[in-house]
Image 1 (cartoon, rainbow, N blue to C red):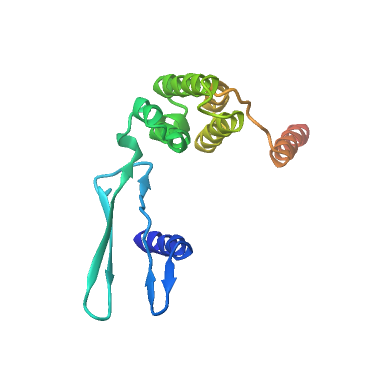
Image 2 (cartoon, one colour):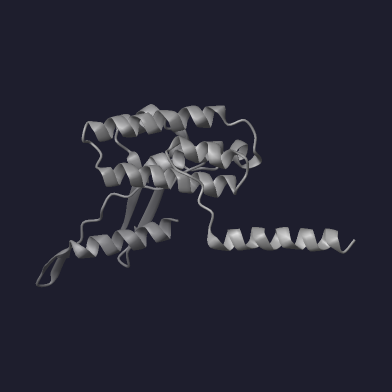
Length: 185
């Protein structure tokens, strides 16, 4: 992960570098690694140490964002809207297994109501609100993988479960196979 962060940081830094004859100033951007889930091994910081041929070393360090440690209220208060779609991932086990999802429902209702409020207060544009709600539904659909929780959770954000054409064809084919199988008995 650290190598990838360094690569991206250099790409950004190069675009804004100040060049002069025989000298360049390359300002490295701030970076952050966002962990959607955490384990006992999840680091609180990420450090990239640059070692130069003359023996100098520079630590390029950032605190990691561990999404699981953030409350839904903090995410809204700090306007960390891109984190909203991933917040539901903390309920992945219950949602994926078809278990109890009451807390996920409560949190989704909170986010929906806050997004609507912020939209009405012109802090979110139509497109931003719609995109955030759509991204939340994408995460839900991925996690549920079509189980009984999907429709209920997706409907909170104002969406519907979309059936892809390939899924429709597969279901239709399976239904035909069942009928043929039962007929041939």
